[in-house]
Length: 233
Image (cartoon, rainbow, N blue to C red; front, side):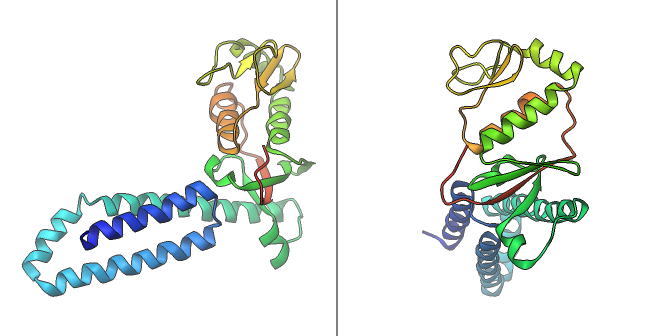
């Protein structure tokens, strides 16, 4: 196996571990920094060995899969950093205490961040602007936000219109009755939402399939989370 292929495989392994296990961004940043050092050393070796080969390698690296994976890594880390900063801003705006121990144990993220960043976490509260609503599971979060959406007459009518029209791979996401659903969540009278999904898909469906579709503004909604030893939905 050549050096570049080994670097590519190792980089993919770092990203796969992050996506699969919900590792905290600090650990991922450390792993990615180590990868950047290895890639830099490899590139310097290429330049040192032969200037002409380096020019050829420069062109070749333009379409190199390592660069593609690094761009993916950049996007993931920026998402994580933005989420952490947005969370701290939200805590300040809500008058929440911020100290070293609490900021490590509990973090507030806007609902609009990538749903993948919620994997491996346990929700503790949902913030609607300055109002805090305690929750214990992601299903609680899902139900609470959908019910808040349905408090608006226009959004409630839009949700009712979508009943029996939006479906996942095997079952309806919204229905006018709970029949056939694995974990029905009653949103409002005559509207039931399927809640049998893992954390990432539950939040993805909540935001992109439902809230975005009915044009519900959730930019002011945030969720406080802690690291969970065992996922809860």
